[in-house]
Image 1 (cartoon, rainbow, N blue to C red):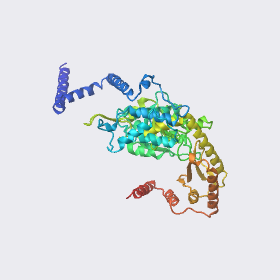
Image 2: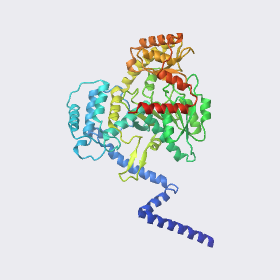
Image 3: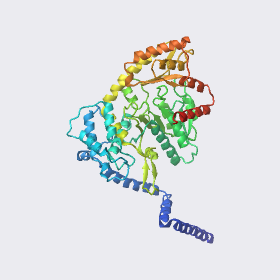
Image 4: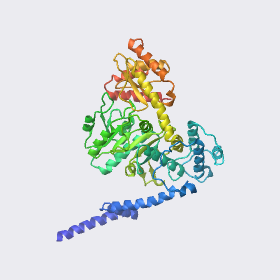
Length: 543
């Protein structure tokens, strides 16, 4: 057994030499770090460390949750979820609640805060006091319109920063309640969690970052991650793919504007980390077959993210009104997350969106952490560092002010307008509605090859409308908003006249946006088209 003793001696010598080297370079701190790293490799130790860390954090967070609460709120038992109120809360009640929350926070002009807020010393303090007086419990307020309410809430928190969740407990509360209300609306349970972001693009970026990091941990063998999506998926996913080095694999769509599911399944490979779908996609207002995508995901052990940025705050109410809406949310078992924009049909202030996950374990991969900075421990749940408090407060106010009845009322009104417009346009010779849009948007295409939709767009703009041109196929996109109620007859009439003039040859597309779209559509090399787009943005923002 002499060879065994020799091996023991060699191993011991190597370990001692290694420890001495660490000590010489990093001191006892390095020895401790290396010991912890080694222990973490032993079976069961990582789980024990996780339990200990969670216990410490839970205790710390429990104390934080009490900050900013009134004695009455502290006495209440915490509910599993905060849901949208059945009936919208009057603005005067919300303003008073905001004032109470604001008074519980540290005044940035007291000279006792050393970070987060960078303001002047002149009239801001007087302005804050004026806001407090205006919103005080003793003041009798008149109810104001929705837009005015959002401006007041945004203004009251315009200088506050949610970067550090311990500085402003009211912002932390508003954000968690907004996410909870959105999650409940999308049929998430008490485990659903997420973040409020600056808009749909940031929500999408965070979702892709989450699943990339999740795959790195759970599937370290995947070196070139991919995600699969219909070609109609929003370009923000292309941006995310570019930023986070995840390859986008596109699936073509048919005449119904839905993906070919046989090709979708074929696009899934051993490198696939995520499947994507839209509810609806912006181009044509069509909801992708999320349940079929979910079936593929469950079969392959993959997560599904649904881009409901456009429809997340509209489709739930359209469904409740009795319109046919395919299932797209957490009722579908393979769906692990959704993104939904508050600043669209949530009627919040720009920019605000939520990204919601089925459970906290998935959301953890979204969070960025860095413990090595001399400036302190750093963590961030989103792309942004500074997180303006104004849009967080305004988002909370929007959801509370409208409530379920307010959203239902808006959806009913806009769906009636949408149906009237679609039915009217379908009757116009040469025009059609592309696909089967399910909510308050649609795309107008040509049912006759003699009708150039770019020329129709030009003719409509000559009448004062601002048209949004689309390609593959050429069409005109229409998102229906409250301001369109009452202009339906005029819009249908002008579409009819424009289509007739184009069909007869009286009107053709002219130099400008339509000419550019027409020219670029005929260039087969899309990399060259990308160069044109870059050059356009470079020039248009030049001083």
